[in-house]
Amino acid sequence: MAEVRKKEARKEYIIDKKKNKNKKNKTKKVVSKKQEKVEETTNKSLWVKFRIFCHGVKSEFKKVHWPSKKDMIKYSFATIIFIIFCALFFYLINILFALIQSILN
Image (tube, rainbow, N blue to C red; front, side, top):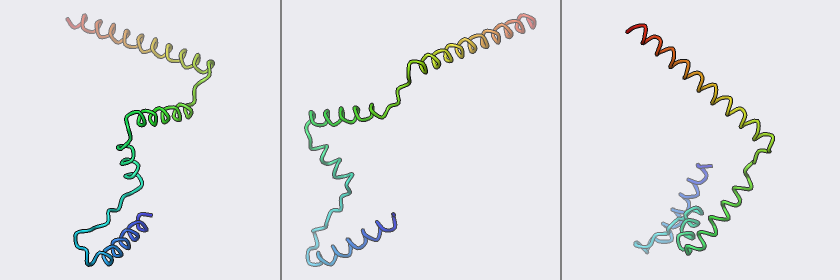
């Protein structure tokens, strides 16, 4: 795909070079579609940009998969169990190190 684009760009350059042989200072500006969109949005007012942003947020929210109530209960329960396990683990390690420190002193 990139090779085809390079060939097309070379052809445009050759054609432009032939057309503009007599016109030394004029060069054709090749602009991609993304650059055109960026230029269009920069020229728009703040209100229009805000509306475009809100439309994008709305479309992204439609793509989100929201979990059901049953799934949320499962995930919450698993999170609470994991937090309790980690707290107990670090508490036991703390007691172990305190015991070792008291034996060595």
